[in-house]
Length: 151
Image (tube, rainbow, N blue to C red; front, side):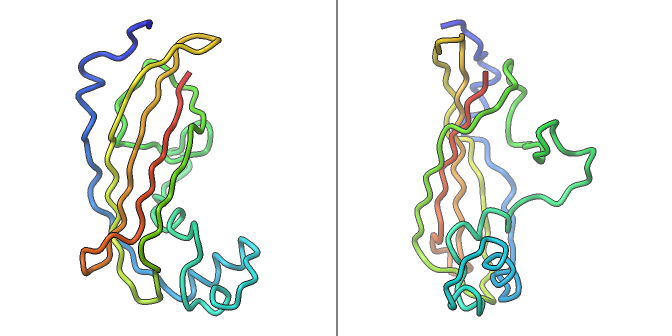
């Protein structure tokens, strides 16, 4: 290993975002269904949120100068890493309860792991973030685990 991960970087494991609360609306469900060409009537009517609806629901709305060179909102949950080229490493989504119009849901993101591996072209840094989405009854609606790779 090349030892890229300092104790200061590793100390960020367990860091959580501020909870973000959002309202699920029939209009937003319908717009998402149309934008993703989902033809199931329950989604087109906005009766229930389709899979992946939660992803843009919790995106930050920021000005252009607050985007990374890749056009992504800068993630303030993350420390400054010594490697910066990011790649997708995996996405695991568990759906526990449906989201309906009128539901208030709250997402909290936790940086759960940071580790290093040696790849063919050199050192790689992996990090994992778990986002839990709860309803107002404090029930788990969705758990999403994202793994990213830096090189």
